[in-house]
Amino acid sequence: MRAALHIYLKALALYAALTIPALAEPTMYFFSILFALTYGWLAFLVFAIAYMLLSGVRPWLRVTILFITVVLGVSTALNVIGVSLFNGGLLHMGELLAFPIAAIISGWISLLMSKKLLIAGTSNNN
Image (cartoon, rainbow, N blue to C red):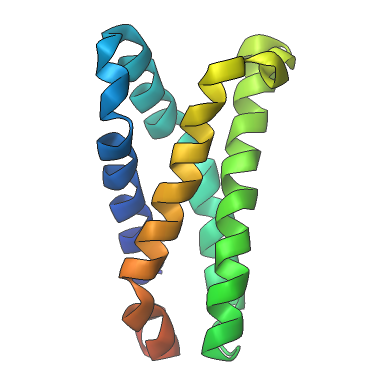
């Protein structure tokens, strides 16, 4: 579980770095980081459950499924944001879709950076 948390925290830091160009409009950057901190735990929950369930799976399959799980986790968090704050109107947000894309990319980069940890298997799963 510590490994999944480590991967998530690294992805969160990468997200903050990837979205720095949004500082051109500081309010947008502030809210994007606030939403990532507030709703990112949902993405972490999806990722952590998949990480624990895949402990005995072959490394290449584990990494592949975790890449898909990053997309599912970000989609889950985005859906909850849309339902709770925008009454489901989040699909028409135009250029703001760059933020969930940045979240997915940061999750994938974090997974790639932690590939040795993922391949190590169940010894780092606690």
